[in-house]
Image (tube, rainbow, N blue to C red):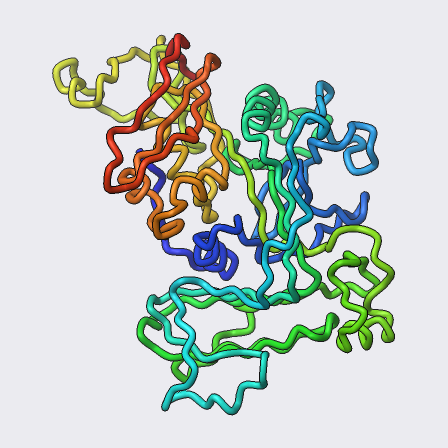
Amino acid sequence: MPPLRRRATTAWDIYAKMLFPLGYGYPLWHPAPENDSIYGTREVDLGSVGWIDGGRFRHIFNAMKPAEDEFNRNRVPDDFQRLEPSGLVITGEEDEITQSRLHSRTVTEVRGSAGLETSAIPAGCGFNFICTEDEGAFLHLKPPGVSKRISSKKHIVDYIRAHFESWFEFATQAHEGPGLILSPEEIIFVSGTIKTARWACSAFSGEYRHKEGTITCDISMLASADVSLSISNHVVPKEFSNFGPLERGISLSARLIDPHDQEDERAQARGVLTVPVQSPPSCVFIHYFKYRRRLFLSPTVIKAAAGPHELPPDSPDPESSAAIVGMEVLSLDEVEIEEVPATPSCYDPLDPVLEYIFKNSDAQVAVVGSTDLVEIFRGLDGIPEDIESTLEQAAPAIDVDEHGVGTISAYRLPVSTAPDPPQVATDASTWCL
């Protein structure tokens, strides 16, 4: 059964849900690097392994750095094996986003309107719009948005399959680990990034369909930003806007600082910008991979969500049990109840893809990436908001390898001609957790 869907209520969930369909990856509400009290700044990069926490990426370690690297020191499993960059095809740095703003498809820009004061918007700092839905989001940035990406999907899938269980045990159970309270579905592997020098993001949710709005945004000053969002004369609370970076003396990529840009010259004169040495620190989008095991009811183990271990007072008789999709009637002696963390509640567009693989194949494990969705819907109307139902229509092929790992195949058909999802045969026997 697919996880229950809910309407996003937090700014970061609304923002991610609205901008992910643009195809750049998962949008981070807090793009600035994570500040660790022991290790200092921990920048999201290729190979980062961690989880999304309130719109911010949190690290466990980086799988592409050596165990002895300062970034990973005392933060990797004992059996840690690095994903060697030398065997991967890595693209970038490339100018992925060249415009100064992005907005969700639920927003239509308008040149002027009788109900909106166009003259009140400074040139280049904002625009008027009409909402076609009740939710929407905006990202303003100082272009370009610079991308890096690992193209070697097969290597990533094999690496995650071989090491994910060790990662999860280390992160949540091992005495030498950080002791995090995470479910397996929350841990992700970063395979792509888009970074920029300055940014501001906004989101809205309410009864806004067919209503007009105005957004103004000035990100010329690093220490502050002027972001104002109003719809139908209602000012959206400041909690639904964010901007950065806020740190002084932060290093920015040389290719993102224009020596002829008067704003950059003034910022450098004030000491806000320093001599650049590394890639830009603010990661506005990530591409990522997720891992999930199939959950079964079986004579060996029943996986149960965390909570009181109580069985129903009346068990079904053998005849009625036939309606429960072939489930066997089990005695208490045959059943072990294992507690697993509750399903994470944050927005994650890959959950429907994982469910699709389990529904349409006999895969024991599924590994999917955000780029799978980009490829599935390429040439159509882009990634839909309702991924679950549209995925069934698109019917992408599923590959199941000799280890029982299911992935989305490179084989794809248009929605109008897609047959039942094809699957590569496997000799792997069905097994249970």
